[in-house]
Image (tube, rainbow, N blue to C red):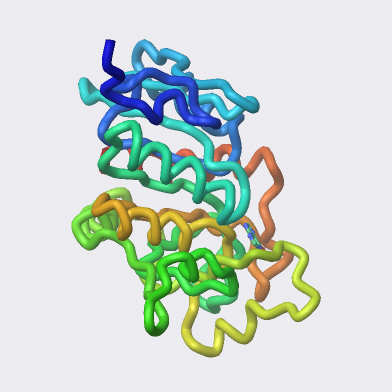
Amino acid sequence: MSNEHPNIPTPHITAKYGDFAETVLMPGDPLRAKFIAETFFEDPVLVNNVRGVNGYTGTYRGKRVSVMASGMGQPSIGIYSYELFRFYGVENIIRVGSCGSFDPDLHARDIILAQGACTNGNYADQYRLPGTFCPIADFGLLRRAAELCDKAGVHYKVGNIFSSDMFYDDANSGMEWAKMGVLGVEMESAALYCNAARTGKKALCICTVSDSFLYPEENTTAEERQNSFTAMMKIALELA
Ligand code: HPA
């Protein structure tokens, strides 16, 4: 018998082809993936749990949609998003993450729509391009996300984000990126956007500000993050 999908299961995902919907929401945290599936999906089905990275498929307002965690950092989201795009027929990945912000107009619980992702990582080196690649969001997803944010009345900004390979950064380089108008820092978007570009698929990163470098007194607790992320999740689900 010929195997139509020779790369499935992958080393990191044991789901069958077709188990994932066209659009996958991707938080960093596996428990947040579980929360999204259990809170918002009708009839969620667990389709992956390798390494505790739970993936679920269900429906949201009649639309089939999946959610699976990315883990932390570009190597981790690089693996999961590549396998979903390349081997599982996934068309859209919407990262729903948290970020730090160094923009004076952004406070804890505001939203950043990452139009572009700067990075200190070397993920794009693999493409051997004769210059610097600019990882960017899919414009259609970005435009619709902005419209949904307007409709929901949430405070958001669209612009560059900094995908750092270091959470504990001895050089505290975030503020250097801030002088170029970069809005905030997280650790995944650049690799996700590279994989979308390389596979001809679509991606968007939506981040809720969990901590501000300028207003540290506003930083959210784990419990507050859970609640304030609900607005972002609903926007991502409407987008799916
Ligand atoms: N740095 C990197 N990633 C993050 C941060 C941060 O300060 N906050 C949330 N994700």
